Length: 231
Ligand SMILES: C[S@@+](CC[C@H](N)C(=O)[O-])C[C@H]1O[C@@H](n2cnc3c(N)ncnc32)[C@H](O)[C@@H]1O
Image (cartoon, rainbow, N blue to C red; front, top):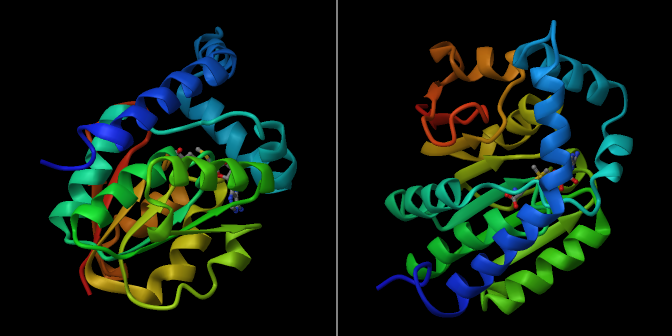
């Protein structure tokens, strides 16, 4: 048996996914309407979002302080599976929000026999809610969530990293990766959720930078990129 599939963790994840769906419905409908508007495309909408973020990502994410913007159950299960397969003991997460992805990853740490996950979020209220959710899931002892800008809070992750999830401001995937890069183990997995930034994709898809990378066919259209550190 594993702790993801039954009992306390399963119950809290069910509830959080329901809360996320309700909280994000309007936001997702607005995104779909933008994408389906005549004369535009997904690529154009994403390019506009990245340009807007580059101007001021803090203000943009303040607007989403009450939104989960969470991974799907299928992607969450994938997070658990890859952390188990990698036998991860040290995980870093850029963009924790209310802690849904964090619960999947911390559940894998528990079933791997223990470890440490460093999460991060700009919004202090989200950090408080994520900590409470981790506590409710019985996983708080494995997780440290740092409040503030990940470009500052993830400067020191204290040891070698088995798995990095990048799921924060789209425009910061490459700077955050470069911050953690010196700490990535050979064979570390980097998962980019909403990895749309061409600068990030060009970097991880260039083998000269020490990665092998390709799109991940889970939740297609959400820009999921699967990357392995090769050096
Ligand atoms: C897509 S959500 C994360 C969802 C979460 N991984 C989950 O599946 O439950 C992105 C989060 O990144 C946070 N964020 C954006 N820019 C950030 C930054 N520079 N530093 C830390 N967190 C940031 C936002 O506040 C938001 O909560």
